Length: 285
Image 1 (spheres, rainbow, N blue to C red):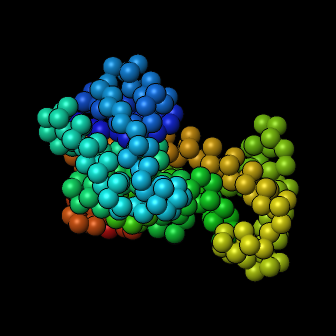
Image 2 (tube, rainbow, N blue to C red):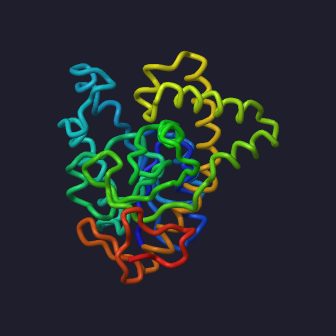
């Protein structure tokens, strides 16, 4: 297969995908020339294509501000058109699979329409439960709703924000046992921190991060931030780095997966909304 990985930073997801099976044609694109992920690609002797998004979005930033650039503005579309021309001119075909592996830019509808359902992404939370958001926010949402487990989700990119059909989810990471482990390893304050956060949320009938953010004081906000950052680091190792390579190689590259619109079949069986779960040995109808 020809697999194109989009990276913007460390490239660790890309590296784990390659380590699982190096016997494919890998191409790495980055919007941040010189990033660590690009260095990993060079070390692996993979094709690396670099094109900064910054000059392309300058006019849009001046027009609406850097934090308000629309997903489908003309500047983003032009940028992606140039990106894909560089990639396809280099490989002389369309890729078999596209993996967003720590890519920090939105994809426009132009790209989704052109390549769906070949684009995969991973999210550090259960997207079927609405645990969207950047960085540690998905974990905060899980804690505040009362969940005691976290899962990483591999999904097919569509035109929404983490709304695409789910291909696979990682094994569950239990919140309580993970925090106990962190405490035993010398990272103190984890149990006290979650007790403080959950007691405050219960006392004020808070079940969403949005309400918590408005109601909590600075100390409580810092407590949930520290908790969630530590949990997300653990989930990256036990979740992201396991399920993403599994989905790419054991499900897609092995020919076990069929995708029709938003329906996903594995081994000929239709998957539930949460896709294939690694801790469910037999896929359910």
